[in-house]
Length: 259
Image (cartoon, rainbow, N blue to C red):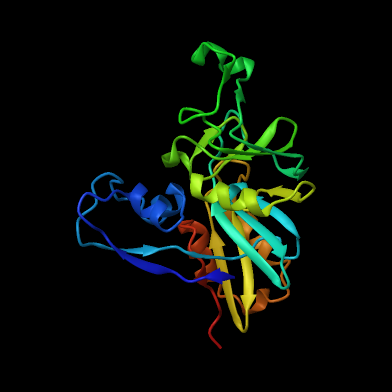
């Protein structure tokens, strides 16, 4: 598990999108934690918990892991010691979901031209959009095969949303960092894991996200089946775990059973 939750005091005219970007979070991460708030009309002076703590998925992998279900990318690398970088992402909408599977960094382009898919040419009335502020790919493109890529965006508010045709988009400041770090040949694993469980010392933690693509018929049952595969399952308070599965707010919670 990495990071720690924080706190933010809302300033005048701040929106939930402003707060999310300030802490390098996607809109979904703040909205899932505060579903009852109007994202555009926050009360000045209110205190918000900032969900900057995550259970690491596929932590033995070396390369990029994208957990579609939580709209977040993790880059595991070694520059003398094992390290990880993590960024929020925008993903494919429900009609064009981001696919799970194994990919590889195949190309890197600065100031890419966007060659518009045939399905979108009627909307844009052109076949391509050159580099510039109106290019949906932003300034950086990392091609990963099958016409999919990891790229920037001209609409930062779209990070943390289901908005693409399957590609993965990052905030402009995040894709710049990732682009500099990632080399051709880096392995990529795209997964769909709305429930993550881990043991830290003697404490058990669960992090539950929404089933955004509706792939899992019974998320509670899915969560308990996943728990039963862990060697520390007997240490978990099933009521606390059930509560996390119902709330699905994306925040890691301590579900350790009292002894």
